[in-house]
Image (tube, rainbow, N blue to C red; front, side, top):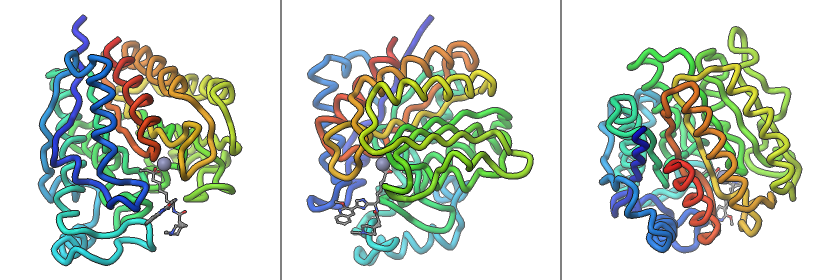
Length: 314
Ligand code: TV7
Ligand code: ZN
């Protein structure tokens, strides 16, 4: 079986960053691609040029007024889009729209069978809400992809799996009452880390009750702890029988990250990616979209994301 893997890299995607003094800076994509080159995987993947999303595509998830506000701030090039985490810079609209463009392009091409799997390193901006930026996230590419799968492709069972150290609150609350979204999130306990949400009691609302799985881990949790709870994630995906899997593989859950307290190694990411690929083969003809997410130690994000691409390659 052909197992073609696309990876989105290029200068326009690199622009999504908030400068040298900020955890999410422009150096991250370069660190990932260097590791890809060192391991030779750069020769095995299909390299895709980043594309900027049209405004109407962003508005599949976001409110029009909010998108207009980002455009205005982008022209101004200063101030904040939230309460101190997400500063505006000139061209932030184009940069954020490019993250969405890559994620949606990858989704469409996976569905069309152009390739089976794709990885968007700067994607996975899971905190942005329909009407506001939050936690380094301007546009929620995960949310736009989910709306695309629901409204434009009529999928009825989508799995979203998030192993970033931070809870994927922007995705969770936007689809809390949506039964077609099976949401599983392993993260550092909200009592100790931003954004503070994602307790195990949050299982979905109304007819969507039971379609959401939140697993908070205590600070300093290691690979063993991750692998143990991973079994719950796997059983959850098995009963969901998804048609498409979205994997937010934030690398800020590795030991040595400057802003979180989890202590995994890249093996946690390798494990999750391998197991999800097996599930994707079983239920969705292999269709899986990887979104990089957080990760603020360049070595960590390079090894974790390279391990994910290696698993995607099989
Ligand atoms: C997906 N932690 C995003 C993770 C978002 C985390 C936070 C910072 C931070 C912001 C900075 C900065 C920082 C060294 C670290 C309660 C606050 C405290 C603003 C200073 N250095 C993802 C968001 C988290 C901004 N936010 O999941 C400018 O760390 O804890 C908070 C909130 C209020 C606002 N202040 C921080 O990984 C991509 N922020 C340096 C410059
Ligand atoms: Zn994070």
